[in-house]
Image (cartoon, rainbow, N blue to C red; front, side):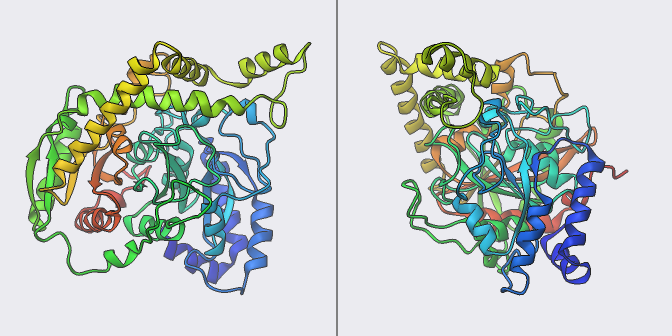
Length: 472
């Protein structure tokens, strides 16, 4: 359901009825999309704002990923170790949502500490894909994307460290944007890998993603990584310019081994649709893509091992009381963290240890520079890049969870974007066995208006976004 339609419903039947319908849909779907819901609090907050101005999201229910701080609402990061933790402050993006009149109804399920591609590592159980309950929704923002695709909320926030907005958007057949690094404040986002992650919007249409992005984007002095850049992407969609004369690059490396035939065909059909709309394309080479996945996981795990050192059970969250401090600390972390999180902490600590720092972490940083240069070179001749979001549609629950390397390989087309820091959007472009396929549009730094305009033109020329789970 679109933002405009929800606002019409709020005006006609009232916010209480709209929230009641959201609650009923969540209960009816049983997709396990939310860890915590707060409908009573949401209604109280909505009533306080009633009549106090008409923000762009006035009365619109929103799901917020559970690694984004919300004052007065439990925030767990999908982990046992943060059970019962209630932040005393709102993240910047939450403040901005509230300022626009949005109504936060709860915290969406996610891979523990955003470490995963399937939302199967959550302490609170796996999320199910509304397109097939035996399928994963993608990760790590699986709860947010499944909630939007399942009609539980019209919009949601996720975070994207290596594809965690775009992957579930692709698997769930919705639209998800990973902004330019620094484009959205990270203040209040519980960190996994500081140099890679960004908060991003998820919705059923490009127009709603643009509106949500405009609401949360822009400079924040409390975030040292925040860029002094203001956005107005919604107006770019109203332009008559379209994609006429736009130069599109197609990276050959993004169609590599493991890409399904249906994904390849759907993306190439999308390329030809852009041609029909007046754009031109050329094949481009990004030779360092082959090293991006390995570099990404070394950097991400290294930063995670440092960031997660703060969770000791002494001040908040899960705690084991046993013997001396050292024993209590060890047992708290052993029992509080899941297997995937412990794996990444150990590997990251190893990569940063004496004698291995230069061999792994420093080398990964050098590869990151080369990956970034690939993008800089490509954008000298192209306005945007076009590729598959994921190499295949949603796989089955349990299919890959016991094979970490196979799961990591799923991110092959998304992690280079985070290493470079450029923006990218995923939107539906086809189906394989009634499962959505995602198209990824990648832009230069702070060129969100360009990729959103192109995505909007494609969306208006096709019907993929109109198909919903359960449609025959």
